Image (cartoon, rainbow, N blue to C red):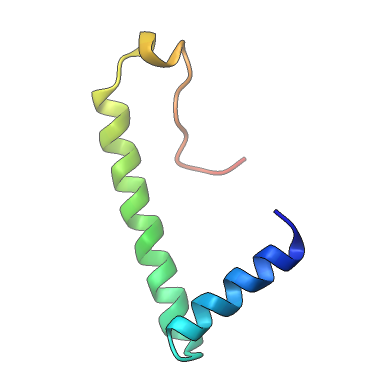
Length: 61
């Protein structure tokens, strides 16, 4: 992803929230929380054989 792509996405997120930075950040944090919960559920439901030993991580490296 290029810097221009990221900038476009930032501007789109801000526009969605009428340029309210706090509302934009709050929505993104809620999205992160939701996706982490989904990842935990997925991890508990999938078998090791299905992923050939790969295990999802909650933190970015």
